[in-house]
Length: 233
Figure 1 (cartoon, rainbow, N blue to C red):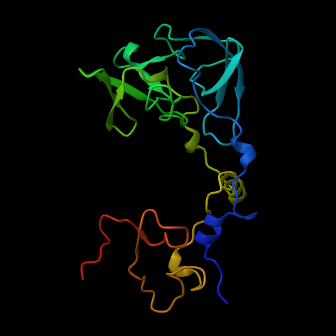
Figure 2 (cartoon, helix red, strand yellow):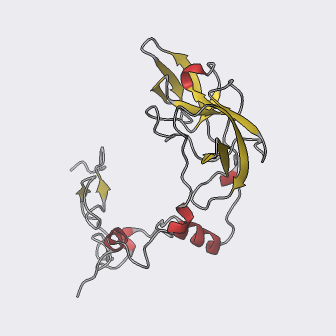
Figure 3 (cartoon, rainbow, N blue to C red):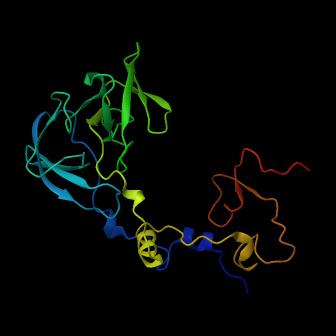
């Protein structure tokens, strides 16, 4: 009798394959765009679900979370729609060119969707004619955003996080378990035939299989919508 392969079991969700929801109890975002004026950092927060430390910010008895910038401390004052200084939150159209920013909104008012990992930042490059801003991302590619999209000035704290080794497999195990990542990864042809379509050692010939990008768990194995497979028969 067969059984579900690992991809199917993980896609279904179970006690074995389940993300730690308690780690994801803090949501990054900005307050409504009509909030302006002075805000205060009331706490520095460690979140297991985020690579960077978070700052808890209070403004007019409303609180929200944002990735911490380098040098942030409890009690520090920041401004929404204020001057273009480190830690302040304002629309990209009001930020000088060449400034480092993070937690960018894709669309005005969505609360910030891009550049949120430790040590990362984007750079404002050019102002375009159609009320949009050209921004250089960490991978050197450029995107255009509406000038009303908000961002935080500065660079996210925690740079160099990936330089520190995990040292033990146990630490890596718990880190991956918190995020429900499959670790350690095993080559498909090394597992049993019952566990994977490529399994068993007979011939070691991996079957030609191109999976659709939107295929369900279990069928999304092999080459996932590849540009090329390397097969030139």
